[in-house]
Image (cartoon, rainbow, N blue to C red; front, side, top):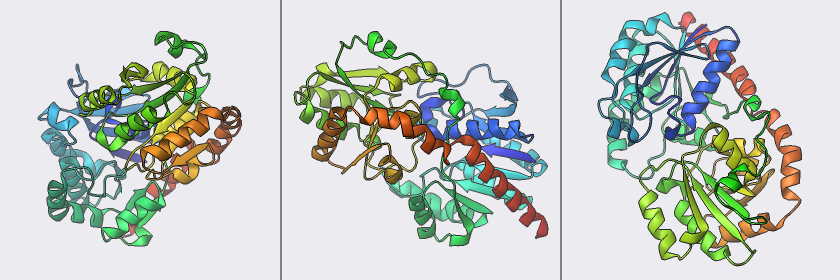
Length: 394
């Protein structure tokens, strides 16, 4: 099949979070299976920089990546990407593909892609990656988008992909019929975690002493990620369990300055390491050395970072507002979304010397049971074929 993936950020633009990585891993796996895959994305790289020396197409692992210039890099990093050249390219080429996989919902690119594909009779599947609820700002703008383009975009999709049953409910609340929703979780390529880096390198780099516990947050430093809650929980547990450090690792998504001030106000700044963005081998070193990986988000659909921590054998703690809390109960603990509960759960995990051994022993088996990129791509292939065949029959 000829498959087009559309997403506003794509590797190496890891500062934009998990969907970029998911889109690349899926595309790479589809190419391995003999499909012809193209990606339409923008030149976004991070909050300050664009992707330089853009070549179209840029071949990445057999995937033809086409990058189109954003009108404003600052707006793109604020989740308002605008790349007019992508819309023009879609009009010229969309009917050369058998199916389009749209990895976003509330962007101009999404609206343009849906209208263009529908006008040419090309089926598209839409995967919102948790972006359907109106939370954490821009509510008025989101309402306007839904009325002008969103409703039409959802209605025109051949299928809508939900990462969890909770996200499926979000689609239904927007008027999407049950039979048009497919629940397909995120997955990771376990080969990217074999072999793992030797333990101790991240600790040595950041001057952690022997026996010092390490709590790791790894993700965008954004208010929705709950790092303020984590800071308050860390302030509560400091001194209860001996030496412990908190590492905040990830790109600043507008909240780093406020978070730094909060750690100073709580008198814990000395115990917090702001490590900045970590990718590739650096990220694996941090995950391997952490005693616990914590994701205290106030809203989260299906974070890939949780799967990555499990693949590294690291226990996980999330809040009960995380869409995969039920999965995490098998490889860690779930806290209520308040600093007292999160502090208590972190103390429990850090005090349980057998938990890391249990996660290392069962975590990969859990991932192999349905959360590998190969298993996810199996289901996507079936969905693409179904959508393409249905469109032909129309």
